[in-house]
Amino acid sequence: MNLRNAGDDVARAVWTALGAIADPEIPVVSIVELGIVRDVRCGDDECVVTLTPTYSGCPAMRVIESDVQSALALVTNRPLRIVTALTPPWTSDAIAPEARRKLAAAGIAPPGEVSRIVFQREAVRCPNCGSMRTEEIARFGSTACKAQYRCRDCLEPFDYFKPH
Image (cartoon, rainbow, N blue to C red; front, side, top):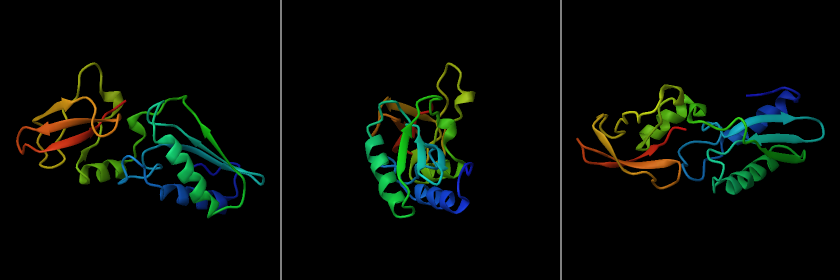
C-alpha cells in the first residue's frame, strides 16, 4: 500500500475499495491480491491509480477500469485518473500469498514463483487431491492466463494460473 503524497484517510479508503474489486476473470481474488493495482496516489486535486495488466492484451482491463471508477466514486469526490503501466511488466510473483490460497481453494492451481522457473515447466500440484502427477491437456484454459490440466491420480481437470 502506497500512502505517499496522500491524505492517509483518502488513500486508505481508496485501497480498501480497490481491495473489494474482484478480478472479472478470476472472481475469487481481488485486483489488489493479484497485484494488478501497482500504485495509488491521492492529492488534493485528484487520485491516480496505476494498473498493470496480467497480459498486455488482457481483455478484462476495460472491465477492471470501469469497476475501479465505480468503486472509487463511492469513496472520494476527487477526480480519478487511471494509468496503465506496462513497465515493469506484471509477473505472477505479484500475486499475494492469500490470493494463492484462494486460487487453490477454488480449484485453480496457483503459479510457482517466476524466479524459480528456468527453462522447464514446473510440476503442478493438483488443487483437488494434492498430487504432483498432473499433465497439461491444453495450453490455454478458460482465459489466456490459465492452462488446462488434469490430475493422473484423481482424474479431475483443473485450471492452472500460468507463471509469467
